[in-house]
Length: 393
Length: 202
Image 1 (cartoon, helix red, strand yellow):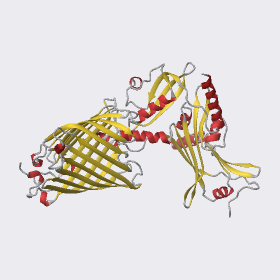
Image 2 (cartoon, helix red, strand yellow):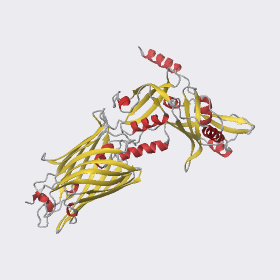
Image 3 (cartoon, chains in turn orange, green):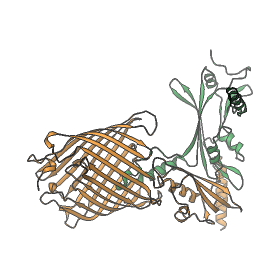
């Protein structure tokens, strides 16, 4: 005990020699009450029940710093400010939490919506009366489902004949920024004969994955995945109609994927293990890099590869050039984009190769993203010349 | 109300307006040495002042710049971290960029004299500042968190974009608002006509 007191005195003496630092900070206090202002996105009882801020509990500056990061990490607020007011008794204080809603997501559920309309011109060799040139894709996304931080997303892609060509549903458990584990589940269905460049080896996928933050921005994913290839146009001999099994993955994402992604990169890879052995295992890898060429222009290069067993190979590559029109000199300025996409599929002696050029305009206002684009699409044909969407089983 | 009444009301309203606040810039002379001094204690926004008295550690960054043909020239920079002690009603200095100020803070005046103030003494700079049309740009950021903390929060946001929920932040317009900023474009006050004043070169 005596040694500890002596050490403390020595520490105080050493610190007193430094004119720029003092032992000012850590002072715990007893919480008398908590009040919030500026937002109704989280219910009043949330702070007590979920964050453990009970009246009469003792709080340290570290507890409050954690509270601030947890609230900022929800993505619902632009700023979180904390103020203390002296309480009735010595060492007691009232905590005021001043929140500033992020107005780029809507309402208490933190909703964002996207509507994309595209008109495509098909190349003559794949021209088919079965394909409608019009595509309407709509997505609704929430960061705060049920007002309790559940996350969800629903996407629907329909063509000009009102036929559903793609759909996606995703759900994520509530998660705070300071936690390093999250759970997401997703179901995705795509009609590869009309949305060839958006589909890989399988037309339907379902995944339920735990994401574990290992170090920095690296993640390890563990869970179960199911992939299906029921479209008769795309069934090859020895290619599995469906696979199910445990999935392992690893990814690094260093970009903040806002309306305009920040400069940096993404790398990822997954392995879907199946009981059928190496011949039917699914391997996937993806990478992307975004360059900020100037304050108004950026370029993103993306590549996705998928392989099933050792015989098939599927690849999707894209280049996306974005030019922001400096109309209002604000974050809400619209942007033009030019996109080049390429799809490549190999299975034994079968080869498919498609391309697309797309020119579009994107607008962003108050949680809504609108996109309109025109595409020139060169869909592949089967070796016998049959268009992709018309091959008989 | 007739037109005359409207004009009379407007003149009365204008005359009742508070006088313009004094410029935060002033000239000082000490033993023949002139300096241009800046103190932002009366110019802080209400939100900035509220943050300083929040009871949490608060970081300030002050910059004084002068426009030149080649861009903005940085004349002065100062950074402080302080914490207001609610119970003892005093400021504690946690960090100060310049090590040569060993003062202990007690009052808000002590804090503003140390962290919200600047003094320009270089004779060449002072002469350059008196060129016709010249002005100073003063920028003050006050934040409850450090830039390192803001970087960490951004990383946590990135972490939440796991593969399946990738569109989650697509609707985010800009960066998080971590600081309260104040930018002033200040014209120089007239230099008192005294001997030894640093007049502009002809």
